[in-house]
Image (cartoon, rainbow, N blue to C red; front, side, top):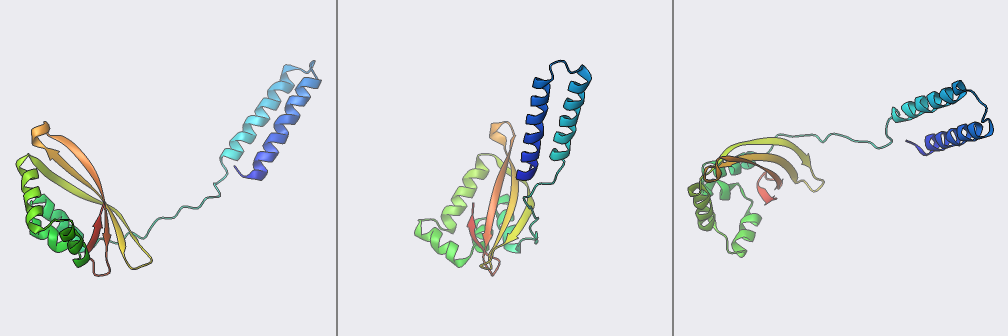
Length: 169
């Protein structure tokens, strides 16, 4: 509701209440007409479009490296996952003590605990001003050891100009 519409509504409401207070002998018809007028005004104001603007991002299909990363998780192949990462992301992982070998151990552990990746749904993408892109996915996985409970996990991939993954959230 715009500021002008809110003021008009408030004035009409105040005038209607004053009129009813001053004319206590007014008929029920006057009261009902006033209520009907106010309700129609509320309906009209509610139907006014919002002043906020919303746009849809240009959803470009993601980099093949994102697909490779997801396939690497689905088949528990650390080499596929590692190769989908940018050199900067690999360096950062190595600095944290992570490597392709530790990644493979983690993926093997997950597989041995009964996790199965069912699908990955691409939700959309968004180009950033610095040339990177964001890609949004929802990955569905089941853990067999937990009665096959389905988990849906959101992922946000930041991809560099070369299409390689620089960050996963």
